Image 1 (cartoon, rainbow, N blue to C red):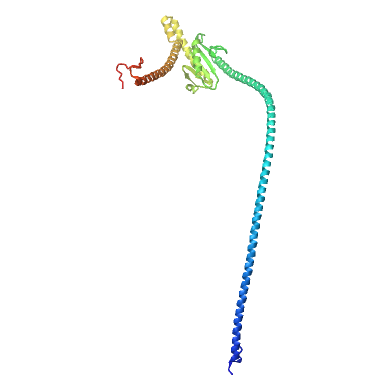
Image 2 (image 1 turned 135 degrees about the horizontal axis):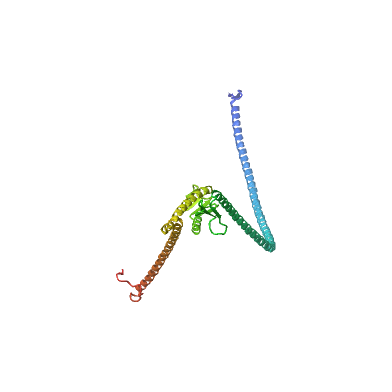
Amino acid sequence: MNTVTCPHCGKIVEISKALKHEIEEAIRAKEKQRHKEEIETITRQIEEKATKKIKDELELKLKDSQNESEEIKEKNKELQDQLLEFAKQLRSLKQKDQEREIETEKKLLLEREKLQEDISKKEREKSDLALLELKKQLDDTKKALEEAQRKAHQSSQQLQGEVLELEIERILKESFPHDEIIPIGKGIAGADIKHIVKSPRGFICGTILWETKRTKEWSDKWIAKLKSDLVAEKAKFGVIATLVLPKEALGGAGLTDDICVCNYDLVIPIATLLRKNLLDVGYQKALISSRGTKEELLYTYITSHEFKQQLQTIVDIYAEMQDQIKKERAAFEKSWKVREAQVERILMSAANIAGSIQGKTGSTAFQIRGLELTDGEITT
């Protein structure tokens, strides 16, 4: 008997049994493998069928869901369209209501404005009359106030001037008791004070005219007026006592066109100097008059201050006339130049017109007397 040891259990078995067992094991393994493959095939088929079924069901559900979604979308769209149309109608109704309300408010506002305008017009007419009356009262009050202020200011200036005039009159009388100090009243042409200088024996040696000013600005017209007063009074010296001094007398005193100008502090020193000059001239006149010759009297008159003033007045008037003549001559010459230019322009325009016509119609067809070429003129 042939035996073989089993590799698994180590038992000794017969070869026939071992082969049989191996064949059986091989068949069993093969069957098992085939069965396993069949099971796997069946399982795969089942899984595929199940997967396909599930997939089909899912696709069906998805398609149904999509159809349902489309239906819902269509329904939603229809609902949205209906809502939009409803909202549009609602807005239209609201807009119409608002327009009616606005129109009603406009009518009410127009009626209210018209009523207010009528009331305002009546009130305005009343207020305008009241304002006109009040304005007239204010204007009258303003005019009265301005007139009162002007009179008060004028009175104040006059009062201040009169006070200074009285003060100068007082100090002149106190300083020179032998002289005659004559105040010139308001409204009378002339200076403010007439100072007649007398010698110790009572002889009149000359006259000084005093003008007092208390203003904020200097005026050159005062000089011309005082010089006119000097001629009228036959006075030798004129003095302006003022708070505001011209540039010639910024130091306190000075001469402006032969008129002495000073401040109030220098009234007595200036009066003393001028008075001494008149006393010296009076003394010389007294000596000459004692001699009694006509030649000396004529010489005295010619060299006197009165004669000098008369000549100076004539020269001043002549200078004014010369200045006026120069101004008039310049104005006339300017006017003549303008007219000459205008005449030349007119003549040139006429010559241009005549030349144009002659150039088109012939030189002999159109002749203007005064526009012909004179001897020596050459046409080009």
